[in-house]
Image (cartoon, rainbow, N blue to C red; front, side, top):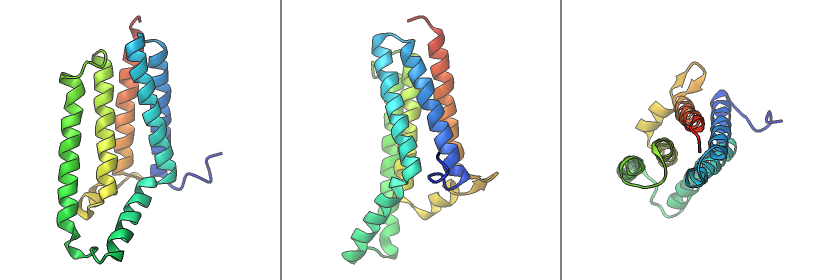
Length: 174
């Protein structure tokens, strides 16, 4: 069924990882208090959107659109490295700040929910940084490890973390 959509092992890894995260979040939602169930459901929706993104590669289309936009205006040249580094630094800093908010300050559920939200925010930050596409960072993110590039393993690690946390949260009585 997905054979025509999945182009490589990294994409396959992302689809499997995000599908597992969706199921784990929905399971946790079904076994949680109303407030926590709402957050778990929102996380399941986010992971569904990430799964669709991995299948369609929208981040590449956004980057290509931005590059075309800059080229037409004569702004795409070798000097673009500084704005890309600034954008990556800004996105990385914003992601780091947002990751800590649910853990320490936001009142969005119990500890398990806050950790799952933090992991998801970090993952969204990774997608944003990948979209900016700074060549030095791309060299790390796209380095193959066992047939899957590094970013695929990062997706899998984040999804496994969310799955483990969701399963632990599901063990508790609502």
